[in-house]
Length: 421
Image 1 (tube, helix red, strand yellow):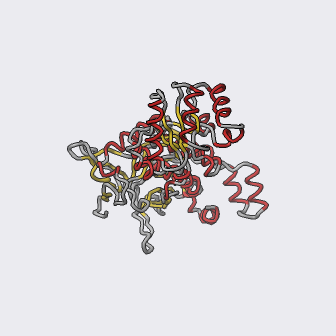
Image 2 (image 1 turned 90 degrees about the horizontal axis):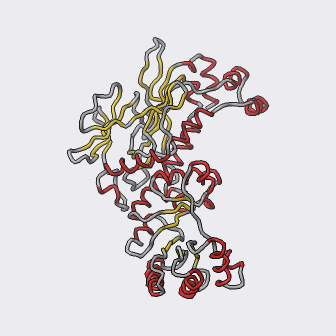
Image 3 (image 1 turned 135 degrees about the vertical axis):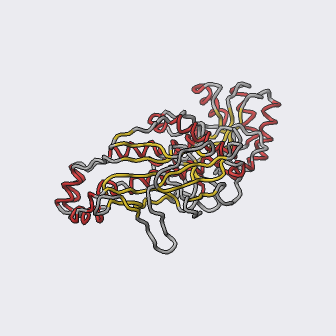
């Protein structure tokens, strides 16, 4: 970014008005849709993006750029406009998720910060959506903090919540974003005590009978008996973290019912992904705790988004379309608009993308782009519950095939007004 900035400032081209767009050329292999997440974090990051004294001094000492560029960076503040898909919206190949409008100099510096947030959070939300749909209404608990970078864990919890997760075990995500938190104990707590009974008694005495007891440190059947004996039939939940979860859940449910603990829930963990969750659909499971697969995007740790220049000011002051023409990475120039075309049943059947003025939205087209930043100021609705509700509404528009976990093509086609697909 700085390599491009410096000569652009020298030539004067850095002051040309430009439009950059963020989009995905394709979805991860076999995925049928993606989910936009990270927009709320993104706009706040853009507004806070600065080069302070320490950063300027480091660039000077390392001789990264010259003094003219340092002067520009020391006063940097994005003053342009950003529009895009609202957080929680589903997306498809070619969807113009973000349009950044400003001078080349101020816009080119945002590539890494924009892509790093959108690629990570959208990958997590897309995986989370598959998991919550596979769960069929049973709550999913985000438990992936130990499997990713400490701050990525907070972002992952936020993205998962947008796509339907009920709670997170990450307390910083709860503090920062207001996400409901929940957690349980690990095997270390049981192993700390002389025996399982002592461990259960200590946890119940401190946390109350509504707590969740981990019952697979030694023998599951023995532990379930002990758990009900210690906590009574009002025991909140038991957690299973190993073995054949389908068989064990059925056995534990029958055992709890025989003991009179009919309201005690069963929570399962142990390297769950959307496929493992779907396989447990017939099991008497009440909630899923999901970690590693979620925070790594369930095999797709990035959404594959790119940041490309699609229009720039010419010598006459007019905005002209520009596009990359290299083999296999061709882009479509021009500032885009986007509509989701709906059929008579209100079901999406195509993503319609065009260049120039968007036609008046008819009864069968829903405009997808919203203002996020205007003249450098945030105008987007950043409420997390709004993104969560938008996700539900957007997903509900898609054909039923969108929820299939088998590999397939995007559930609706992307159609460009010029005829390209």
